Image (cartoon, rainbow, N blue to C red; front, side, top):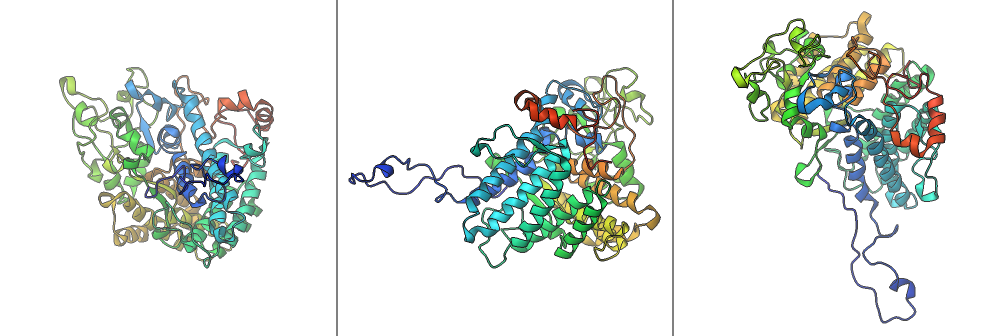
Amino acid sequence: MKKSLINMIILAGLLPLSCTDSFDELNTDPTKATDETFDANLLLPSVQYNYVDATAGYNGGILFQSMWVQVLASTTSGAANYYSNGDKYGISSNTNSYLASTWNKGFRAASLAYEMEQLSKDKPALVNLMNIAIIMQVQSIATISDTYGDVPYTEALQAKTGITLPAYDTQEAVYKSLLTRLETAIGALNADAVIPTNDSFEGYDGSIVKWKKYGYSLMLKLAMRLTKADPATAKTYAEKAAAGGTFASVADDAYIIMDEANAYNNGNGAALSTPADIYQVRWSKTMIDYLKATNDPRLGRIAEVPAAGLTANQSLTSAGNSAPEVQLGLPNGYDLNGGATDISRSAGYPGGTGTGANVTPIGRYSRPTAIYRSRSAPLFVLTYAETELLLAEAVTRGYAVGGTAAAHYKNGVSAGIQSLGKYGAAAAITPAVADAYATAHPLVAANALKQINEQIWATTGILFNFTESWNNWKRSGFPELKAVNYVGNFSGGAIPRRQPYPTTEAAQNGANYGEAVGRLSGGDNWVSRIWWDK
């Protein structure tokens, strides 16, 4: 992240101590900013950072959704037993902490965005900053709601006014309000007004043209969440988004390059640069098989079979074999415990590698390559690829969004391949190669919804935007996944469809929490469905 957050401004100059009629000034702390002196632009990078961090690494994404939808897999043993939360749906010692992180970090982002809005709302020169603050609130609240369901909204972020125990709004009400606020905020962005500073979205630099496209692309995504729960609203807002102008190329991708040197870590990179994690986390068989079936050019960039032996399998620097033909995905739901679910008993088990004390039973399964181990790697929010794939689905559903489903699909497939290059030169694939692959694998009308949504799953998963992979899977049902029924799991052998509310909500906001839980069919558990998940 290129802009670092400044939490406090030290005001220049000293107060004139000789004036006996300046009592108020004498009692003003000169080291603290006021609403009038604080530059609200300084909040923007912290809003953006807290948002992307809310679903990265141990804040949930890599431990939960990455394996729930079989992008990644793990044998979950030894020091990395926290991956039991993933493809085995099993409680670990810190599960309650992990499941609360998206809530806590997401509301932190929304709270800072709300403060940014309040500091800029009565200042005409900051009209763009104010409306970007609203857009980021929409993005943050939507992600929290997608994860948990009904959430505090109307009364949320109001602690300054004395509301510390906010009521929960229904997800239906939240979504309809978010779409309305988003439309108004995008419409109020003004390219002739002062542009924001400290923008951490790579390549945006406060550009109102780009922020408008981001807003409309976000509108499209939220609209498409409602294709089953409220088809009329989905159609209305998808068409508004397309008419307004969504992302036009991979240059519009919304992402942040993290900055380890200044303590802004990529949580996924932090996890995968831990020896226990690099040993345990592999690509799922579901994902590798999907990529191999069509010779997807991303496979050779994202996956490697480690060199033989335990040492190489735990090494952060020992490169593996990235030849596409040798990649092998780890089947989900296996362990190293020696029983019926031991990996050695899985179909197609390739055998371990190494000898003597340096042997490992999981050495031949593909792991993420070094591009994912950097703590300064990008974290993605929304991409041109996902937007084009959603437009392809919108056309398929009969929405008037312009273009053909086939053209949007081709754009989305090619863009998904090209966006991988944001991880650096080792990940880059040329536009010519990406376009050739997309041309060779066109959309088949009879199979359109399946193809489109499998591509969304693969593209968001490969970019490590696991929460998005999971949410779109819930909405679309694609890819068709076989759940794991591991002994002692917390979801009854079903793939989790929501995260339970943080335990602090029941303890501290019990009455409002109870009302929200009462609206959940099945209660506050991992498999109750949120409103739009039909």
